[in-house]
Amino acid sequence: MPRINLALQGGGAHGAFTWGVLDRLIDEEDVEVAAISGTSAGALNGAAFKAGMAAGGREGARAALDTLWSRMGALADMRLPAWMAGSLSLTGQVAKAIEYSWPYSMADAISRMTSPYAYGPFYANPLEPVVAGFDYEKVCGEGGPELFICATNVRDGKIRVFSGAEITTDAILASACLPNLFQAVEIEDPRTGRLEAFWDGGYSGNPALFPLFTRHLPDDVVVVNINPLERNELPRTPQEIQNRINEISFNSSLLRELRAIEFVQRLIAGGNVPEGAMKKVLVHMIFADDLMRELSQATKIVPNPYLLNRLKSAGRAAADVFLAGHKDRIGQESTVDLRQMFG
Image (tube, rainbow, N blue to C red; front, side):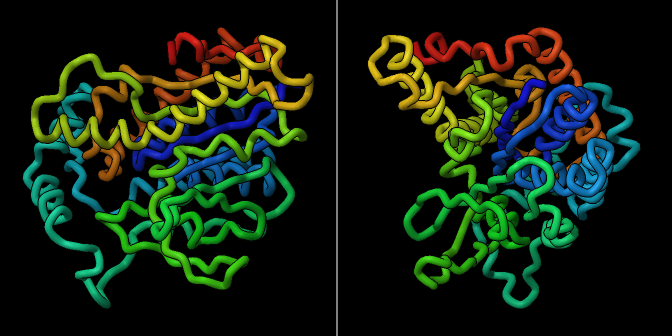
């Protein structure tokens, strides 16, 4: 049975794409997910998948993911009225309607001029009820795949990876903490006893790949990429520029780790390291860049139900294409040409 590790990127509401990917992988009964590294929305998807798998196998994982995203779609936000979403048949039209809407523009402007700390006692993280609803006995237990959650230490800028009993409501909220929207999440460092503040893991690992390199885990890492690596057109409007800055920032840590993997692959291929001294990681990617280029930073933070379902469908389709074309290569070779990517 092919065994894989999953690396789940963060990207707010665009994480519904990963929901679709996982939903399709659940159908593939001869593929086992051994471990998951997730950041932000990837952390939520990973926690739901693991808890559901531990509680009820594959159908339990499917049910847990469906529950997560039904709750995400019900979050209070500035989403389009249902009649308007229905009247816009193309994903890009819905995205533009959100991005250029007066409510979103006002909220975006306010977020750039005020701090989430300005709300004082009225502050509440809208994700907390969703994240607190996970069954942490299952999330932290031994059933299902191993789970790693990534967050960024505000003080030193370094990544912290939570696993096992360290994964709590606060750890997942920290992984998804955009500092212009949410107050930093404070968690005690068990080594020092110091209370540390954390922001979104995407700044330092989106997601971190290195926890998946341990010897007992399979060689194959499947990255579910929800931030486009390339955009051919030069961003010109303020919205386009800010959106591309966001994409580049949240892809940078992943690209650094992929470059390191490519370097190690060359060392191994050239016989420059003793056999078995370094793990030969096989890299795969599931993505839908054409769709993601129609979306924007605005659609990441506005969980519009129309777009969530569109993203889920796209995730299932992308996973189906990957499995049809590359399933037989799992355990044999990478399906991403890293040398060409960084050449």
